[in-house]
Amino acid sequence: MPELEKLTINLTPVDLGQIELLVEQGHYANRAEFIRVAIRDQLSKHADTLRDTAARQSQVIGAMTINRRALEHHRDDGRRVALRVVGFLAIADDVSPDLAREVIESVHVRGIFRASAAVKEALADRTT
Picture (cartoon, rainbow, N blue to C red):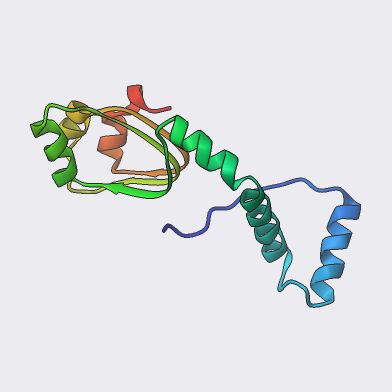
C-alpha cells in the first residue's frame, strides 16, 4: 500500500477542543490518530454498502497493480479492460503508453492513481 495521503478538514472549535481533550487524556496519541480511527469506524459502519456498490459497479476495493504481462494477456485474448478502483491503482513501470492505450478502455479511481507520466498522458482521455 502507498504511504498515507494528507487530507484537510474544517472543524468547529468545540469539536477540535473535544478531540484535544481526548488526546490529553491519553485516549489517542494525537489528533490525526483520532481522525483516522473515526474514519475507519464510519467506513466499517458502511462496509455492506461499499461492498454492494463496488460489486454492482464492477469495482475493486483496496489496492490493485496491473503490469505489462497482465495487459498483454488481455490483449492476446482480444479483451479490453475498464479499471474501476476504490483505493489505490498502480500501473507498473513496465507498461508502455502504447500497450496501455491498446488495452485499457477506461480508468476510474476513487483514491490514488499511480503510473508513469507517459502512461497517464496516454490514458488522459479515458481517465475520470
